Image 1 (spheres, rainbow, N blue to C red):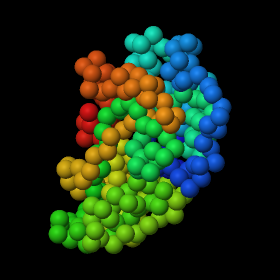
Image 2 (cartoon, helix red, strand yellow):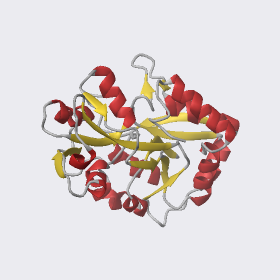
Image 3 (tube, rainbow, N blue to C red):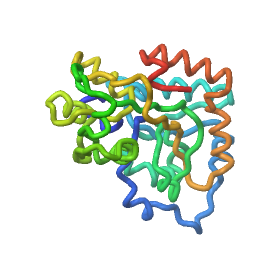
Image 4 (tube, rainbow, N blue to C red):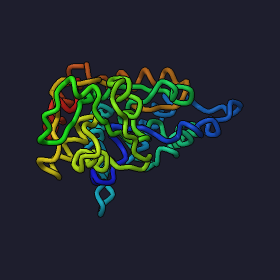
Amino acid sequence: MTWKNALFGLASVAILFSIYTSWQKYAAPSEVKTASVLARVKNSRTIKCGYWVFEPYITKDIDSGKIGGMTADYLEKVAARSGLKIEWAQELSFEQMVPALSYDRIDMFCIPCNLPPEYRKVLDFAGSFGKLPYYVYVPFNSKISKTDLETARFAAGESYLTIKLTPEKFPKAQLIPLPQMASIAEIYEQLKYNKADAVLNEDISAQGYMKNNPNIIRRWSDEPVDIKEMVFTIKKNEKEWGAFVHQMTDTNLPENKALFRSLIKKYGLTEKSLLF
């Protein structure tokens, strides 16, 4: 998936979903009794992952269909330490994620994300994949001051976390909303064409855009405006499974921290892009 058509800020990817308004119809029937996710995983020695292709977190070879990427490398290695393997079971849209988890077609949605608290009505979040810092980006030659930034024109996509985060952090700014289907590139291009003065977003998508479009935008400051925990999405009310996922993936564990640091380097990121 190219940065031009990516819908995240992701896993963000950075990563906001459009399923919020329709989740209730996907809740699993309470009268149906199934084995717990943890019991099923321990029995099969396999974690069935749902995923969405979003570089550099998840990649998919066009010819072979092989899954790769930073998240795939991380999960496959930490799962192996627990005697488990990862099965990349289903490529899903975010509208399909809730029913896939609720009806046990997958055990975990394996794109790291940060979601608003209201999503806990239908999903639980577990594990750890570092922290995603959000920075302000401005046109490459912009001289905007901190004072002027407070009342600047900020572009944000309606399906992204930053549509709410921007007015929280810059309450006096003018918000310029873009339609839900606007890509990350289209948001940054508001700066290119002087339709906005600034964009608040995570660094991974910004680095991707700047690599493909040099000297168009720049990070206004190396000081993050906000930092979000990156977690994985699991079925509601599976507390033992959630605890297991957290123990397995926790980036604070020394062996996981060393792995995480090596993957940041391998995929060309910096420690300002993804914190841990």
